[in-house]
Amino acid sequence: MRGTPIVNAIRRLRFEQGQMTQENLAQSCGVTRQTIIALEAGKYAPSLELAFRIARAFGVGVEEVFVWSDQ
Amino acid sequence: MPSNPFRTPHPIWLVSSLAATSIGLWLVFWPPDTTAFLLGGPLIGLGSAVAAAQFALVRSLGLERQVAPAELQAWLKVALLVAALAVAIGNAGLLQEGFAGQGALRLGIMALVLMVLYVVSSSLLRVRQGANVVQDERDLQISARAAAYGRAALVFYLVSLTVMLGFSPPERLMWASPPVVAFHLLLAMLIGWVTEYVVILLQYWRDRR
Image: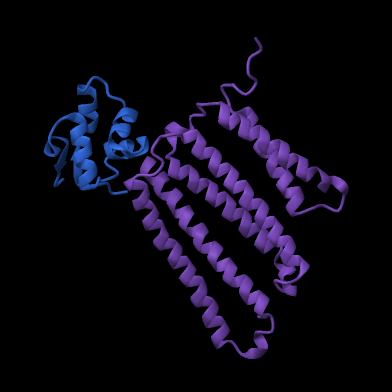
């Protein structure tokens, strides 16, 4: 897969939030752990709704989690 | 206190009981000339019961961490559909007498056994997954993409069949009795579904790489 031009800081934010596990993040966002894995690996671009849910789980704005990358 | 024999670090009971169930299914669906076919029913019963016991009791087979719930369901559906295809093609001769004959009845019983096995296995999977999310937006997206491939396979088979029936001279279509054409329509449906679920598995595999 070519991946997505949207890069994210989910992995970094998880560790900054006291080692939040992928499972915990998945549960708080209502998705499966495998979707979090795919997001962290840049294999999947989330819907706007899921992007907001993830940002809320970290208590930050969407733009702090997801960034458009031209490269 | 004796330890639970199913709580082993490796799913040895699950693998061996699934093997026993497969042998049982083989004996029932393709019975040999000897009396060995009598073992088919007990093997299916015992094998599936032991497999269900270990599957329900052992909480960590490692599968849940590696594989999405929707992918597990897709594996199950592929197994069911490939078995159904094998049964349909392997017993195609039985349909020569038409859907009202004894052959069709036997095929119907085989299809029923496969459906019961699928419903039981699928329910067991759901029980294991408990209150966890079993399908999210990524699963739905993968499923929608795969459905397009399934439809394409179905349309390709049907168009090929239509062209062959429409353009072949009548003397070359002696084989195309109504039951055989009906059988081909059934095959088209099965191939469409198999394509759809195989594409689902391929997409999950690609995302894991």
